[in-house]
Structures are given as C-alpha cells and as structure tokens.
Length: 193
Image 1 (tube, rainbow, N blue to C red):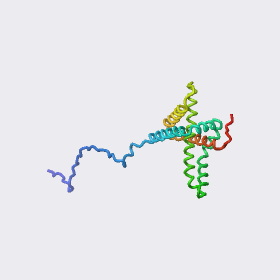
Image 2 (cartoon, rainbow, N blue to C red):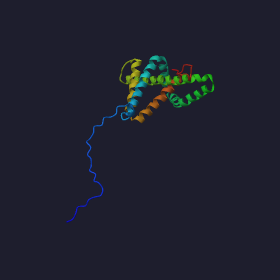
Image 3 (cartoon, helix red, strand yellow):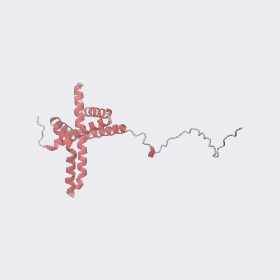
Image 4 (spheres, one colour):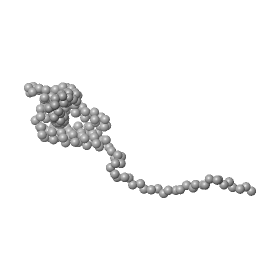
C-alpha cells in the first residue's frame, strides 16, 4: 500500500465563536445616529413662532403699522427685504469706521432681528385675517389672526421638503424684514387712504 500524505505544516481547525449581544454605547460622543435635520427645522420654526408672538405682544401698534405699509407697498417690501443683508452690512461698516459707532453695531443687529419678528407678525396677521375672512369669521382677535397665520406658515414650511421649507422661510424673512423697514422710509404717515 500507499502511505497517507502528511503535511509538514500544522493543521489549523476553525474556532467557532458564539454570537455576542452588543450593548450600544449611550455616551453623547457617539450618538449621531439619532440626528434629524427635519426635527431641528421644526424646532427652529416653532421657536420663530413663539418669538413672533412675543414680538406682537410687545409691539402691537408697530405690527399694525407694518402691516398697513406692507399692504400698500408689497413690491417695495420685497425689494427692501431682498437687499437687507447689504443694507445691514453698509450700516455695520459705517458704524465700524467711527470709533463711537462700534458700540452701536449690536443695536443694529438686534433692530434687524426685531424688525424680522415684527414683520413676521404682520405677515401672520394678514394670513390669519384672510383665512378668517374666507371662513366667514367676524372680527377675530389679533392674537387669533397671528396664531392662525403662524400655524399656516409653520405647517407649510414644516411639511415641505427641507430645502423648499428653507426657501419658503427665506421668502417670508425677506417680506418680513422689508415690510418692517417700510415705516422707516417715510415719516409723513403714508400709506394715504
């Protein structure tokens, strides 16, 4: 007979490892899997809504004045709103050139933010009034009009695809800031009836 072949190398037999239960690490440093851009966007919109209601509560007369100007000059409000970043930049640079003006730069930024919120309240009031008028509701309260308008804006921007929601908010922001700038252009009390 023949002799069986014997390998000069040792034979390695496979080792079977039993499956292990892996417990996920709950530390904050590894918790990126739960990130949701949509959830963050909705939280931003809700924050804007709450701040808008607060701005109306603090400045109801300014909100009504802004709405009156917006209704009479919507195109001008849009143009002013689209150019506001440049306007704010020019004002900021102008203030920075003067040494005393440097302390006023934060005031200009806060004024722009308040203008945005007051303009947003005016837009919301308009949308709410239109919806109530369409629904045949007689004389809704200003808070109800603004609340409904904010709800409409938030729902539309929240259910749209994220990129479209951001574009819609950019349009709302431009109209809001532009309409808040309108009363500053003319102190003679236009719009005329």
